[in-house]
Image (cartoon, rainbow, N blue to C red; front, side):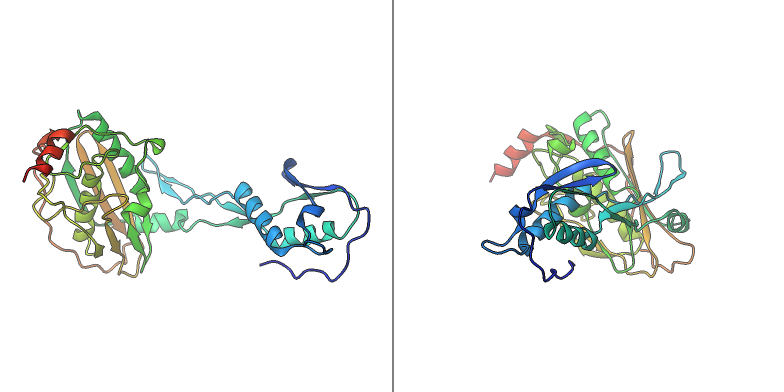
Length: 305
């Protein structure tokens, strides 16, 4: 929200840029003449708004939640920083309606993370649901994709009333984000060009969530049975297609802990000691490795009448 524009006119011979700095480093330089309304001696509010949005994007530092590290200890949270837009607008108006060049040091406000060390310590206490599935760790590309997706959901906290979306949290599966094409997949699995193996992560998460008694909002099964879970216990996902989503109906946050490695995909759900939850019975899986096929073989099977 910007301050109202001062009711005054700029002085003549006002050439000279505004140098915008952050911690002594020049972010950009702008000139008042580029931000006036056509044929008028007033600030164009739309141009100023776009400038402020640009500076905010360049200088924004997102906060980092506290997480449980690889050694099991809590890695403390870190605050983020966001441009104080009203203060910058006030300084821009002062520059606009004055003579010559100016310099301004950006002022940013702290942005605090949702999950701090105290909260994380409280909600890591009580396991309320878990599930494990198994895979061939020798299938390197598929195993790599699973580990990457598992890392994306690990340490994620779902607050009371909040809905978790697998696609939103994991993000688009692209080569730029490290995902690989998996030429060998599990029989019956959705054969995505990039990111094969992701559905085993979402399916393992689904079963852990179901055991914890959380509310399933959106889930789709593969068109055929996938052997890493029991029939009807899968959750297929695709960036431009099906998603898996659940809602936390409890009065306490829940924490997702996820790990994929050594042929085991494991998800556990935790919360505080004070949570009152209603677990559901979900049968577990054997350690027998699921059958694998090439993408080409599975695609040919899909075309068979």
